Structure formats: C-alpha cells, structure tokens
Image (cartoon, helix red, strand yellow):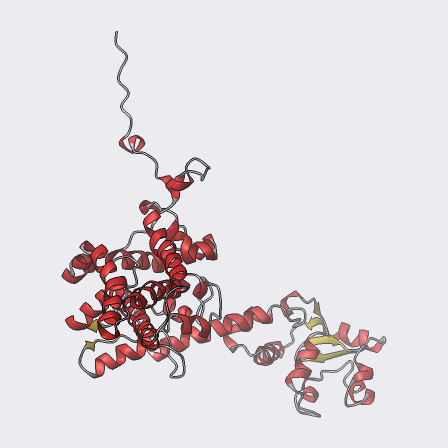
Length: 433
C-alpha cells in the first residue's frame, strides 16, 4: 500500500526572507540592498574622489545650493507634507514640480516613500516601524536602506489615495528614469548650458548635492528621534530641536509633528526655522496651494500643558511633602492635650498634629511665640490670627506631622491649603494626601 502524500502548507513552501536569517560570512552579501548602497554610498564616494580634481566655480556652487533646497523641498513639502499627510492641496504645476525635484533626491518614489512614512507614524518605535530608532540610531539613519527588510514586517497602512493619483503612479512606474535625470543630468545640463561647467554641474550640483540632501532627510528618521525636547508628548521618541530643523528644512520640530501630523507646519512659532512652511504659505498667497490644514491653538496648548503637568508630577514625586494624612494615626483631643502637658512639643493646626520640638529654636518668631501654640488648636494663629504664614511655612509644617485629631473638622480645609501650596487643582485633594 502506497504511503499517503504529505502536502506542505503553502506558507512553508515559500523561501524565508533573507532578513529572517542571521548574517554570516557566507550570506552577508545577500542581506545588502546593493542598489540602495550604490546611490547612498557608492556614487557619493566616487563624487568626493572626483571633486579633488574638479574646480568648484562660484556659479556652480550657488546653483548646487539652490538645487539642494529645491530637491529638499521636493521631499519635505512634496513627499512628506503633501502626499504622506495631505496637509495641504497643491495645483498640478506644484505637484509636477515637487514630484520631479523629489525624484532628484533619489529616496524612492512618492508611493513607496509615503507608504513607509505612514507606517512610521502609525507604528512609531515598534517592530512594524520601517525605520524605528529602537533598532539603533544608525539603523534609523541609513541601516534600514542598506539592509534588506521583509515587506511583510512593515505595518499595514491605507494608500488608496496614492494608488488613485495618476501623477503618483506615473512617477512610481518611471522612477528610475526620473531619478537619474533629475539627480544627475538636469543639474549638469543647467551648469553646462548656463556657464559651460558640465563636469562641475555633475559632481557638485548633482552627486555631492545628492549626498547632502539624502543625509539631511535621513536625519529626520534618526536625529529627530534622539536629540531635543518633547514639549507635547514623551511616550514615543520624536523630539524638537533647532539643529535638526536647520539641517532638514524645518522638519526638526518632530515632537510637534508626530502629535499633529496633519498640520502643514512643523514650527508654529514665527521665529522657528521652517522654510517648508513658508514656501507652502507663499504658494497659497499666489493661488498655487489651498486648504492648508492647521490644528487649533487650543488643542496644541492642551498638549503642551499636559506635558508640563506630567513633568511637574514627576518632580513632585521626588519631594517630601510629609506623611500622607490617611497614613497618620488618629489621636483623641484629650490624648493630644495630655501628651503636650507631659512635655511633648505638639501643635494642632487644622486637625493635624505636628511635632515641632526640633523647630522651636529655629522659629523666626522666637521660642515664646511658638510655645504659645503647644497643646492648643493653633489653626487661627497659624492662618492669620498672629501671622499669615507663607507657602514655605505650610510646606515645612507638613513634614512634622505625627497624627490626625479624631473628629478634626478642619482637616479638609487643611488639605485644601496643602493642595494649593503644591500647585495642584483642588480636585486632586484625595490624590495628594
């Protein structure tokens, strides 16, 4: 009798992706995305070498700087804010311009770049984030492009709008041609036809300009998740820093951007460097852009205030506010009076008993003044009867607590004063103790 045929599951018959295998001496070359390596490392190295033998004309230097800004804008205003986040609407001429110069930055097609970026926002700092900084700053900067990634590991996102955009699809299908022409040939033609510097146009405005704009953009994935402050939320890694903003044409205010990704701005203050925002605003003024999305100032300030409150709460936990009232023992009035008569330096303020023996000699009003309050209800004295004590005095007194008077009707009022002294809302009264 023949043995039954074993049918392997379809998934098992597929060859495992190279990224799931450990890197060894025999297979390391299979882990490398060689096309990417050529464009982000190989060609730039050749450009740097050739630059030693190629004079830099001032016209070419200015053109290289202008084209750096144009191709950088293709990524920041086009790939990022227009197509990834749809934070504004652009007319067809602006779309064509951004798609072209964005291709000149050689960072993949609009469709590919935006798909990864949407996954980055949805799955920030997780394994589904294609350039998660949790895998290391070098990986988030360039490693994710140098080493092959399994497409199945990248989080799912909706790109139906991009799949229905004719310009996006055209650029995606013809990306290699667009990239080569816009990255190398176009800047060379401008310099060559303009002032006869064909070689300088290729080396400086083409290859070296490409290296700089790529590294600048990569800083958004790495530096902007590592350097700076987190004024809106610190649960994930994005940060704000002016240095990153200067490097990335304004993309450095990344903590704000991850909190409000639909906002066409990264910088919301007039003095913060965000030329991408200024360009989009200018296009709107001359009728080339519309529907510039902004988040309401009220919601932005909510986020800022919540983060400040979180920092204050963290700081508060490091400070001694005295034993919480609910942890103190209950003491009858007669017991309190008897202990005071027996020599203990006890003072009752707002239903809370305090041992002031170590403070008597340091009391600013003198020993006699504080001695008048021992064994008594000193609430009125402490709160204006003799002297209206400061927040510092209230805070110091709270560190001397030893008990709560049974039936002390003024404990609630004292707790409210304590909460106020700590800068917390009265509604937090039961959380402070």
